[in-house]
Amino acid sequence: MVNCILRLFELLEYLFIYMDLTKMKMKHYYLILAALLLAPFSMNAQVNLTIQVDMNEQTVSDSGVHVAGSFQGWDPASTELTDVDADGIYEVTLQVDPDSTYEYKFINGNDWPDSESVPGQCAQNNNRFVAVGATDLTTDLVCYASCDTCGLVVPTTNVTFRVRMGGGITVADTVSVAGSFQGVAGFNDWSPGETVLTDVDADGVYEVTVTVPQGQYGYKFINGTAWGQDEGVPCSCKIGGNRGVDLTSAPADTTLDIVCFGSCSDNCPSDDLVDVTFRVDMSNEFLAPEGVFVAGSFSAPAWDKDTFQLMDGDGDGIYEATLAISAKEHEFKFYNGIDSTGGDGVAEDATNGAALEKCGCDNGIGGFNRNISAGGQGSAYLTPVYVFGTCDELSGGVDIETELEGGFNIYPNPFNHTAIIEFKNDFAASYDVIVTDLTGKTVRVINDITDSKVTLEKGNLTNGLYFVSLRNAAGETFTQKVIIR
Image (tube, rainbow, N blue to C red; front, side, top):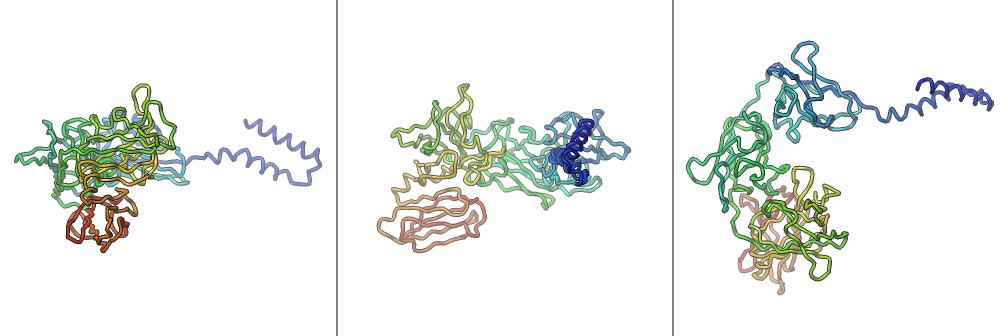
């Protein structure tokens, strides 16, 4: 390669002499040519990332110390760290792309069962993470399975998890909780069936107390001992697909609020069924021959994607189907067809995982789902006409039963900035809107509404669940839940 470049320089020199261009210094041409030749290499230049871990408080495995991460395909055995000066600090230097963020985890051995449990206060997706800039970088020295240096005592808390197994649930022989706290509490992280809750006084509330370092943790309750028996955490209290708790400054003994299985509060969903008519506009789509489907947490098994087919009876491009689902919060998504093998069709976010980000719920694995609260919708409910793969809606949802009784509708729900409160008001009567939070505190009032709709603005309200009450001149009220995100 070097000989070829030198030969090219010689040829160019002869050419410049022949063209009588020797009045210009040849080194200028050399510099220009060298820059052109080296440009592709400089554009792809990588930086050195040195990762280090203090193993002085560990018995190092005979298989060595390794690191697995997004920079090497998450292989637990291919990237070994070494301790060249026998000071207990193991490190390795890797070449990585600049201006990138990587996740990783240390392994005291060479297989996943030997991996560390990363404490919540320094974890991202239960892993360590590092943001690499344009220059070489060495990570901060931390103790294995810790966010701090070795020898530093991290305060702990005795945290009690509590869940009410109500709402018509058939309770399994074992009720458990799984989460990122398990690894630092003597279990395996995210392992259902290992951390078991008990109901000692037979009041329907199951609980367990574990000791963990202060930090932030994700978790989920399990009605059983295996994934698939885990609760569907409602969108309004879900963090990355799970429940979350911040114990960063927790006292020595911390008892979490009781929540109902699959609910955000101690108010267990009823086992009543609501006839929900799901509607989606497919006018902008090339329809799959198998048809249009809806799937969600309401099906059994959950997210069964080829059972509930929607039909367009009048040829207007709007497909719909009425399903009897439990009166609680559900996540769902529309699908355009199914695979010939019976697998998934084209989901709404198949080409763009964030397609529903502004109007949906984070599913914890990089995508978003739509959300509906079937509780409080009466016995029958028409969803908005959703536009497939977007946050657009052709119309608001209608609560069929309460509309006839003078109720009202809120859309979109959940909402980010503004929502429309719509109700029947044929005689221009005066109504008030009262918004209260979960504690019952009134946080917003809109008086003397004589139109049939009014705009509710988020303003200074924080994200979360609220109750919106429509009150007429006679003092009668109709109440619905709304979620702000």
